[in-house]
Length: 99
Image (cartoon, rainbow, N blue to C red):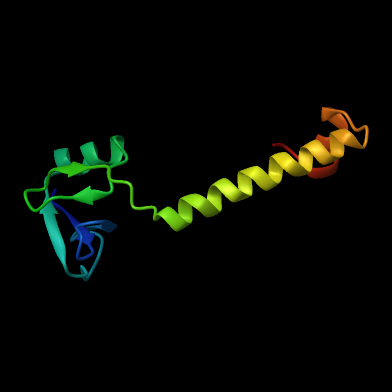
């Protein structure tokens, strides 16, 4: 069966479609074989090239990466503050859940 990769202008995957399941397939799209589709799925590829080959590309912006690092830092700082108050790891986990 043939699959279709719906992509954006940078060939970043937006979704997978199959004519046997979907009545319409958004454009732009790239037709891929079942083998290419499975390769993309199994390797968590998010970019589909015009020949149906695929690869993983980091689409996260520098700002998004900085925000994620900021959240990690705040979480570590909060945990340290609770430890400074005398709580142990089990008490902290009971309060805020799994780290």
